[in-house]
Image (cartoon, rainbow, N blue to C red; front, side, top):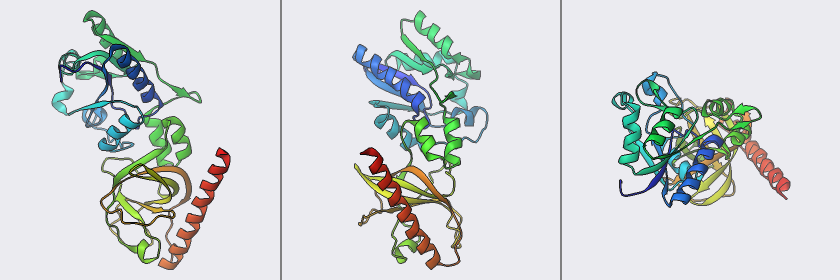
Length: 303
């Protein structure tokens, strides 16, 4: 990798929100100036989970994060480093030197709150000083605020867990989404005449508020309006695993094994237990009508 000239943004980038996008815009700007490859250097585990033993439910899976960095952040290359107890004890100078020497970074970009190395001693200020002394470019980007609130993954997680997807989208700069490979479900929706595509919440990813949402599903490069239930199917006895069940409006076809990305647009109702499968089917049809009304209103506002 050393023969590749890079501008490297450092961070975890959970959600690729507006603050992260500001870093990535600076990375692209400096890469264009230096004729270098805009790159993100990130980690396969959240540092707080390793360093502090905290359970940090993430906004998306590692695969989803990498895809978002490329699509939303318009970053050409993502380098993911393994973050474990050994890496945690690495002196910060050694980490920065490895990014410069082994990855070929001619310029570093980070947020004001970034830190690295043993005991977090590698603050953004110290890294900037090291860069000045070693002839490496460096930008430290200030936090982004919206409505007087600092845009952060922590705050956005609270919005997602409350089902406030419209507000989450404002702070993310894009709709909140989940993506995975479609798996075989219980076939109950198909038997009720309402086929769905199903996938589990990826391991380690935050569970949105249980309920029904107006969503948009992306199949390859095509958007399809949809209605999605997140929850444990309380009407039926099951294993209580949380699943994402998405009904694609006006779509037919076999998607098992396909990669589907579901954007959450608006919360419609809480998940509920129904007395029978027929009662559930009737409610699902009302949910579909509610989702269609949501999309028609959005189209009218866009005109």
